[in-house]
Image (cartoon, rainbow, N blue to C red; front, side, top):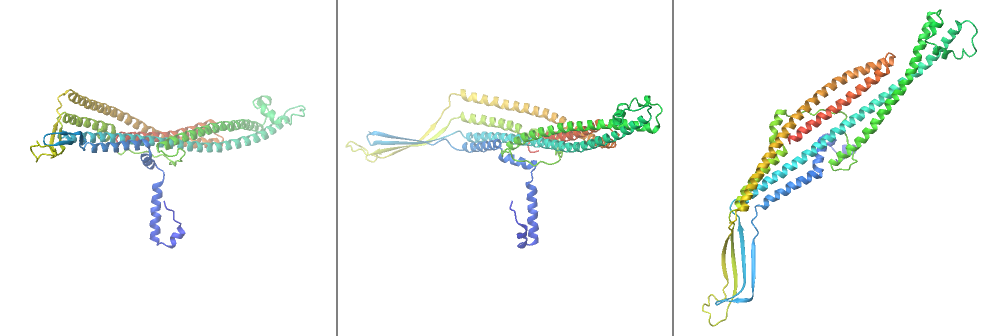
Length: 494
């Protein structure tokens, strides 16, 4: 992309030109953003296995041209040493040329065989390409799922940090309130107790009050309502103080678990990113830019339409169809090859004059000779040709059986995929509903915990449920999209 400095460009261009360039630049930026379609295109262009398969297909096209050529032209030359003397001449050398021709229709059948073999090579290329696209798609959605899990864990650890602060504040406030209440309670007990008190009692008033909460009514039945309420408040604050400390510890434990999950996810993301870049044949440490949210891929065809398209567009079935047609063309070619071959040629004999008094014909003395020639191959031994015909029949039968078996397996796989897709759809709908309810439950548990009416276990359980359902939604969406990619792989070009 060409970067243009806006200040300089605006001085020498009209407003409509600037607008057009900015629009085109925006379109180019959008087109260059990372997306699954972009990575699929990169994989097709860069992956070595796909390029090798396409190269083999191009090589198979050259075999078609080879079948259009005639057999090699034959040339023979012989030199007489010494020259061979005859009555009218002296033979010095002999030259012979010959061109063999197959039975009419043999080359056409051979070209048909190579053309169907080329179709097989192209179907194999499509199969390798579609397998690569499927692998890239699976890696893409796997990485999207891992990144969503990582983001979810990071958000959860931020929430835990906030809850830990609240629990620590609650523990601090409850501890200070408990100390004040227990001190006043100790003073009240001392005022209602007859007899002198030890000197250390006033200093231990709070602790004695906390230690004798349960037995206070039995020790002093004549307490006032105010003193009784003060004792209950002291008991509540003491328990809240202890619970607040447990809250802080348990939140720290939860934080440790999530931090460990984040570390595991980062390691797994690094591994899957390496595999993804390897499929694209680019540096393994190349960064990826993944979407923040996963969107469910919609099917463009119904299962009935896919079932009808399957025999026509599946690459493996195409390959078996081309293989059977190639064996049929080979049967015709072998039959033509069992017919005689015709050769047309010419022999040229170089002669020299003979100086002999008895030479009778001076016109023929030393004259070169030209002799047209025709040759014919007669395939008398028919055993190998008959065996070739039987071999081709058996190979065609094997191709049909392999195609039928592959079609049965694909239909069975199609029903299995349909079942998996229905299950993924139900799970996704269920998890979305459950996530909405878990969100409501989490908000209620948080409100009750902050107000002092709820328990820590309720908050943690609601938080864990919310996290679990969010992750399940991500996983179900990724699984759904992978199943759709599997369908697209079965029916090439869907």
